[in-house]
Figure 1: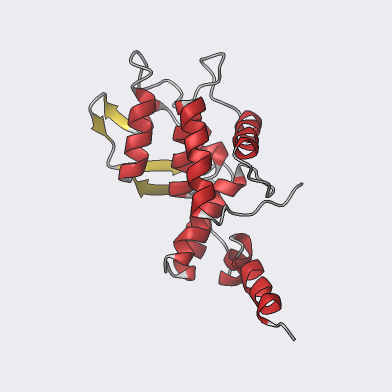
Figure 2: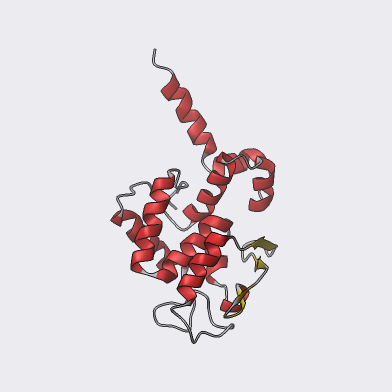
Length: 189
């Protein structure tokens, strides 16, 4: 299994978002949802339209997900960025029902698979020249990394990720690597 890191540079995030937006609004929407919620891709891809919308004009108050891996219930409000991305995408699906998969595969009827999402993400990253190892878990790590860098307490992130200890969360979101690198780069003996 390849180790992936968060997307650290906001410019890279914007470039990948722009590439996905230009290519496929469905893929842009799940990317935006992933980097803004920290939910696992397998949980995002299982969502139905009715999980985010009550009707064509009304959003749910909170996105609720039962984690496939842990069985735990997670929830979060939908940010303006998420609503905008989902709204733009769902406008391309005017006949969708609330019971339809939110992110259907190209063949329709079935949700997009994790492996397909990985290939889409990898292709978009390559198209913009992003060369770090990337995978669907990158979205979750990017959420945690930027939340931490913006001052969110590590114990809150630990709780959001269901980690046993803060040090696990720091390692998971790549902060430990950044701190180790800073030691090497600060010494110029």
